Length: 253
Ligand code: ADP
Ligand code: MG
Figure (cartoon, rainbow, N blue to C red):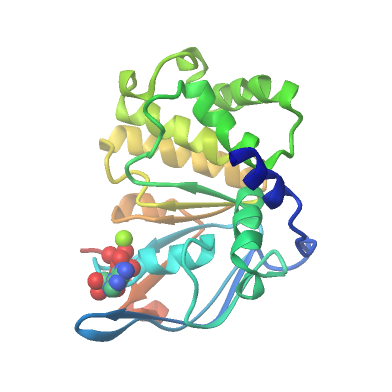
């Protein structure tokens, strides 16, 4: 059953990415949530461009729309109106099957609560996206996963279950997992929100190195010092990107 589902996804056709296009481009993106209380416009016409290799912090008060914005870019959720282009691919035109395959190849996602599968070993967690996307040959996957775990400094934990690792180690594993299919774009929603400040700073070192290596990174954070270490700060205020003059005042909780 699962095999059948995988093979259907693998057969999905996707437009070719265009390496010269901006890494991310949002054009007039609106997101309206419909709730029992009526409609709520969480994103009010966002225009945003992120260049290849840029490491951008996304900051803003709680409830301003940061996660909604991030979920548009990963394809986890879809704009109500407007366009989302990632490396020249018009993501807003893709159907659900195409989005699943596109995300697996194109976007590495890192969450605040790591979201590793508790019954799989660290190595198996990192191999999982490779099994889903089938880009790397089956026989290459364990070695590739070990190389990624080495890159993030937790190779020696490969055979353990996630629960036996510290929070910082688990987030490193999650970053290794996000790199499994060598995606050009990494998106992280408060990845350091559950880590102490020293561990968080080490995580930013790691992201900075990945950006130097050519990855484009978008990271939501509440931490002013961490945001300052990014190439650029994007401030979200009530569903809009704040003018740069407002950034400092509205940036943090
Ligand atoms: P942030 O990540 O900046 O804290 P969110 O993007 O999570 O903000 O939320 C922005 C606004 O949209 C908030 O007012 C929130 O309550 C609302 N919101 C978020 N997700 C939903 C949803 N699924 N249904 C209805 N409202 C939502
Ligand atoms: Mg959020």
